[in-house]
Figure 1 (tube, rainbow, N blue to C red):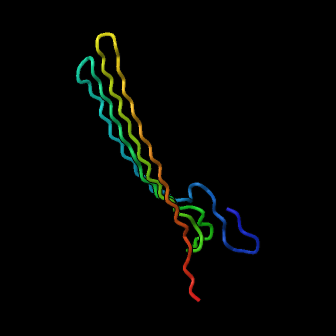
Figure 2: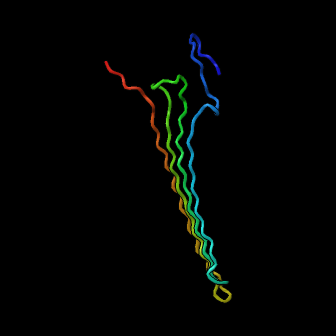
Length: 107
């Protein structure tokens, strides 16, 4: 930690002093319908709430971010005699919301 010139407040930038709540979920199905037909489906997502840059520990500083990405994929394989047909599809969406922590001032 480093002190600002002319100030008794400490400037904190270490990773361990930042906060984050993190939750993740994953679902997967892998099924063989027959020796000639397979299906794989996967979906996942997570939610992370992070707050950082609160150097002075006041309501006027800091940044809060909320991450909400989701993704999924599907893979279908079918075989007819000597012909193999494979269908794949994937989807990813990453969203991030930022909230600046500012204090409301009254005059």
